[in-house]
Amino acid sequence: MAAGHTITVEPSTQHVRVERDGQVLADSHNPLALHETGCPVRYYLAPEDVRVELLTPSDTTTHCPFKGDASYWSLPDAADLVWAYEEPKEAVEAIKGHFCFYDTEIVAG
Image (cartoon, rainbow, N blue to C red):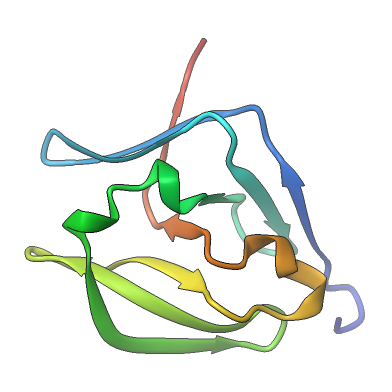
């Protein structure tokens, strides 16, 4: 990692839900919380907690020097709504194959 830049991944007990236009896309009681210097907490959700049948793979990819190469998925009306690291760097290998959405809701209780 670069000096002063840290990333930690830990199991979370937060209840995280993702909805779009009233449709639940994901619902998880065991997300992984990724904390990265200078970024908001991101919740990575296991595939079984995501309605992957609603998502279409995108041609978009991005590269993070700390996490690796990300692939993206879209909805018909929302391009690149979710991403995942299929082969993340060793320091964040726990997020491998987990999905991360831009907009998540923390469900109270």
